[in-house]
Structures are given as C-alpha cells and as structure tokens.
Picture 1 (tube, rainbow, N blue to C red):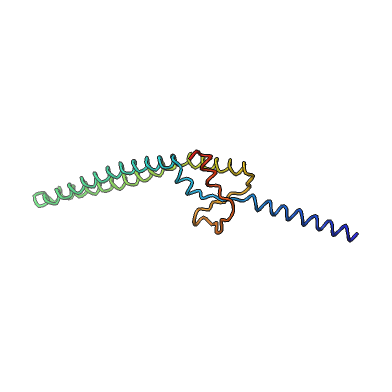
Picture 2: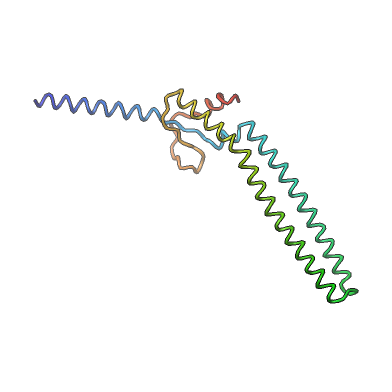
Length: 169
C-alpha cells in the first residue's frame, strides 16, 4: 500500500511539474508601444493628426493676432472715445477672448476625438495579429513589455518580430 502511495505521489508531482513547465513555455511578451509606432498605418494617422493640429493652431493664432490688433487699435483710440464706447469695446474684447478660449477647447476635443477614431482600428489590427501569432505558437499569455508597463524581466519569447511579419512590415 505504501508503494502505491509513493507511485501516486510521484505521478502527481510529475504531472504538476509537466504542467508548470508547459505553463512557463506558454508565456511571451511584446512591446505594444513599439509595435504600434512601427505600423505604417500609425505613422499615417499621426501625420493626419499633426496636419489637423497645425490647421487648428493656425486658426487660433490668426484669431489671437486679430485680438492683439484690435486691442492695440482700441488702446490708441481710447483717449478720443467716450467712457461708454471704451467700456463697450472692453466687453467686445473680452467676448473675443472668450471665443478664442472656446475655440481652443473645441479644437482639443476634436483632436482627441479624431485620435481615438484613427487609432482604434490600428490598435484592433495589432491586437488581432498578436492573438493570431500567439495562437499559432500555442502561447496562452502575452504580456506587454512596454517600459513602465509592469513587466520587470522579459527573458521569455518576444513576439514583436513575428507580429510585424504577420502585419506585413
């Protein structure tokens, strides 16, 4: 009976050790940030966002220049105007400043919306490729090895080259 127990314990330990080794070999890592930044679609999306940002920036700078010009004009004409006209002009300038601030906020919101719209399909494509490569290699867990992402040691299999190959670059 003791012999059977020893064999049973040995068998359980063998199965557990085999499972542990298999679990160890089914873990890989990938630097998702590096993958996304290397994707041609991401570079195109970033260029589109930069162009849109520059357009908004030019519009706001134009408005700021117009505000400064009006301010200078109103300041130089202030002595020739009545107190009532100067107060009216001050309110006009404040309204113009407020409009510029609102335009800046709207531009930031539009940029954030456009970024999400452009980046989501790219992210989904990358994740699908990661999942495909991991499944093809029998990998059960893939950890993000982006610096500061929580992964401290990355001695396991790096999927970045295979995922890039899957994506065609």
